[in-house]
Every structure is written in structure tokens, then in C-alpha cells.
Image 1 (cartoon, rainbow, N blue to C red):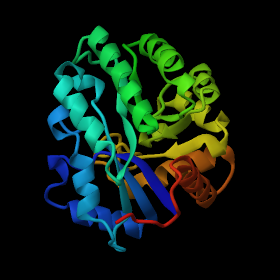
Image 2: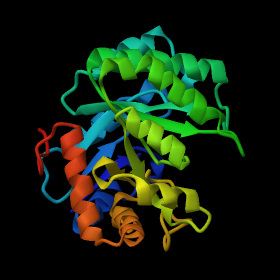
Image 3: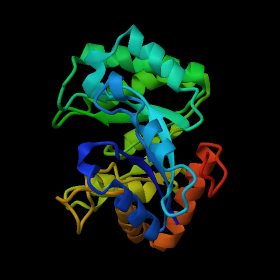
Length: 276
């Protein structure tokens, strides 16, 4: 069995066949999905909650959990009203994480100082809500700038809480991976691990302890080979497991079983539980 620990399923790209996408995932052995609640910004951070509620209790689709958070792209839209809204949503029974949040210096859709301010604010909110955080970190081309800033801010504002987090869609180097592990984080690997130029990601996936690892699709983005260029979907997450298994000389089933156990342990959930 497998868990897709990070998927964006609320967008228009799934409007025509969302239910079929979820049913295909279940057929491929995906038993749970963490739906990410960023939406298009503060006004729609409840999108994953709505999705989780819509499919609660069904055995023909994976169990769906939710997160909330303002992505660094939309950090410039953050305000006091949005913060209060998220504090309220954080109490919802479907919400198990705060994110994805972090820094993106590649696209700079929001000014970097604003990204940092909103990132720190959300870490404090997540800390008050006792929710783990899910991190997005993307540096500018040919640089480690966002990695340095992100990990430094986590060390200062999050590590003292004793709470943990996830580096989603890990694309850093081995030193970044080790620093994250030292901070108590899990690393999640996505479909880009199968891309020809992703050797640094594969090197990290080979070295990170299997019990500190998750797998994801980041749907609808980053469809793994042989589906690269298509819309991604949770049913493709076994392909990520197969790549990691090949790197480590074990079976995809073992990768699936361990990352599934990691997910339930990390979020203190009961296996095979579809809340509600």
C-alpha cells in the first residue's frame, strides 16, 4: 500500500474527473492522500478541507486528510484576516498539517522579505496549533539562497518548539538533507526523482534513512517517467516508490510499507482510518 503525502487536487485540472482520479488511485493501492490547502491564496485555504469532507467515509477512494497554509507565491496577499481564518481552520478535524509554507526565490511572485515574514508568522501559528509544518523551498537558479534562509528560519523559529515538519518534494543536496534530519524533519520525494537530470535528488533518496522518508506526487505537477509531461495524479505515486526501491536495492512494496508507516506515525493517525 502507498500514501501520497502531498497532492493539490482542488484545481480546475481535475474538475472533469476528480472522482475517477481518486478511484484510480485506490485501485493502484493508494490508501490515503494528504490534500494540500493552499488554493489560490488566503481566500481559498479551506479547499483541501472541502475535498476531504466530500469523500469522507468512502472505501472506493483513498482516505483524504487536509492541510492549510499560504504558499510563498501568495505571501503578498497575507493579512490579519487571513491569519485569523487559518487559526480557526486549524481546529478542523481533517487538518493534520500547516503548509505548504516556506520560501520560493526561483519565481519571486512575492517579495523575499514578505515571504520570510509570512513564513515566520505561519510557523508561530502552526506552533500555537501544535501542527507540523510542510515546507516548500526553491532557490534561485544556480544558488542555495532559499535553502540557507529557509533552514536558518526553521532553526530559529521552529526547532525550539520541539514540533517537526516535512520538506516536501525535496530537491536539495545531501548537506541540506542532513540538516533537515537533524532538525527532526522528514523528507518527501516526488516524481521528479525519475527525471534524467535529478541525480542530486536520487543521491539524497539513497542516503536518507527509510524511516525518515515519505513519497508524494505533488499533483498535478511533476508526473514521473513514463508519464512526464502529463497531468500528475495520486495513482502515480507507486512509480516514485519504484525509483526509490531501485536506488536502495529493495522492493517497491517495502518502500510503500515503510513510508506508509512513517506517515501514520508522524501524524499520529491510525492506519486505514478515514476520519469522519
